[in-house]
Length: 155
Image (cartoon, rainbow, N blue to C red; front, side):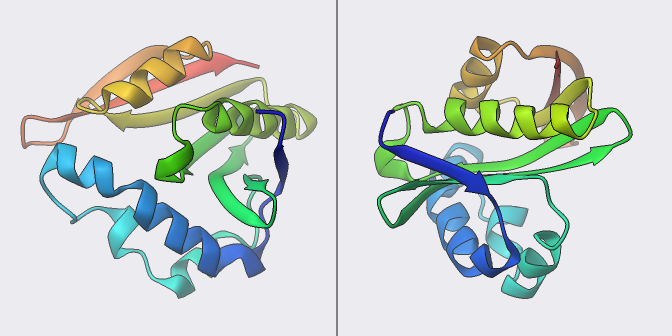
C-alpha cells in the first residue's frame, strides 16, 4: 500500500491505539467466542504505560491510524505483540508493512531474531506470519482446547 505512512508509536497515541485494537479484535472475539481477552480488557492507562518504552509502530492513511504493532527488545530478541489492523483495510498489506517496519527497528536495536504468538484458531494471522517468514516454534495449550502458537524469524 503506497499511501500508508508508518512511524514509531508514541505514548500520546494511546487513545487511538486502544480504539483501533478494540475494533480490530472484534473478529478474534467472534472466532474464540469471548471478549475476555487483553485487547478488550486493557485500560487506557495500561496502554499509555505500555507505550512509554515501546519499539512498536503505527500506520496511517492520511490522518487516520489504521494499524499498530507493539514491540520491545529483550537482549537480541524482538518480542512483537498486539498487531491490530482496522477491519476495513485488513488484507491490504498494512500488517506486512508494519511487521517490516518493526523488524527494522529491532535490527537497529541489535536484535537478531523476532518472536510473536497468536491463537491456534487465528488462521489469517498464521497465514500472514508464515508468508512474512515466521516459523512455528512451539504450541502451548491454554486449557480450553486452544493453543498459543509461537513463531520466530531470523532478522
